[in-house]
Structure formats: structure tokens, C-alpha cells
Length: 227
Image (cartoon, rainbow, N blue to C red; front, side):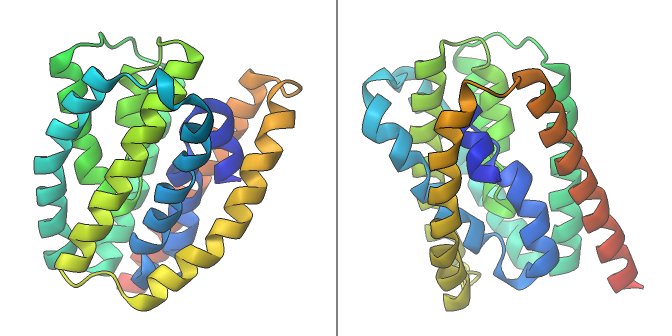
């Protein structure tokens, strides 16, 4: 489902999948989702890599580096259950921002700031798309898809390196991430034909509703577990 959403609008894989995966296997997150996050963009880049906004990408990656460093501290010193609540809160914030479709000017400052926030949330939870997507929401379709794809690919690779460095990337997370590539590919293939037939407004509302419900369920689960 996450791949269908991202294949259609350029982001959304983590927004849909991260809260569910965190509920099912918190010890394997965010490593498992990062494997998929690194693989899916390659399909978009294979077709539209020439449309990447390289200048904007540079600003985004510049901001992501310090953000990822902060996320590394969070991963090491914050418990798995607290990180689960963090994932849920980030999903809810992303849902609100996406639903409101706030108008954000696209310049070096806003792109770098979005990269910084994405570095924190993306590395710590696997959900790094909404901040960058918010800044690029008014770009042309091919440019936003290509730029986000390149950013997600490089970001996921960076996050995996950081997770390995701080000892938070178990082999099972890589194995599960590898297995998840199969449904990810199927979702991406389905997204193409569906893109022209589905009403974007209704699909968007449905996706945001499911993501919000998953986030609330994740909060409830972690609170009950903590008690």
C-alpha cells in the first residue's frame, strides 16, 4: 500500500508502512523500512533521473546531515517503546501538514530546514518524506518525483550507515527489509495503471485516514505495553 501511494504522488511509503511495521516488529525498525526506502526510488530514477533538481537536492542533503546525527542520539538513548510513540507523533504531524497543504516558499533556507527535519524523522523513524514533499509540492510532477526519489535513495543509504555505526541494524532487519521489497515492487507496478483512474482527492483522504488510525493504534499499543 505504501508503494502504491508513493508511486502515485512521490512520497508516502513510510507514512503508510512505518506505524504498522513498528507495531508488528519494533526491534526491526527503522532498519527494515530503510531497506525499502532505498530500493523504491530506483524505479522512479530509472525513468526520470534527468529531472532532478540538483541544486535543491544539495541544500536538502546539507540539512539532513546534522539532523541524522541528532537522530542517532535518539536511537541510542531512547527506548524502543518511546521511539514507537515518536513514530506515531511524526505520522500525525505529517498527516496534518499534508492535509492542510501549507504553502511553503522553495529556497535554500526552506529546503535546508526541511532536510534537517527529514534527517531527524527519517533516520529515527523511517518517515522523512513529508518535510521535503511540503517544500516541493508546487513543483512540476516529473521534477518532484525525481528530486524526492534521489533524496530518499541517498537519505536511506545514509540512515542505514548510521544505524550500523550505532549498532541498531540487526541482520534480521536487513532480511525482513529484503523480503518487503517483493510487495513493494508489486505496489509500485500497480500504482501506474491506477494513477489515471483513481480520484486523487478520495485516495488522498483515505491514505491520510489510514495513516492517522495506524498512528493512534501505535500510541495505544505502546502506552499499554509501558503500563
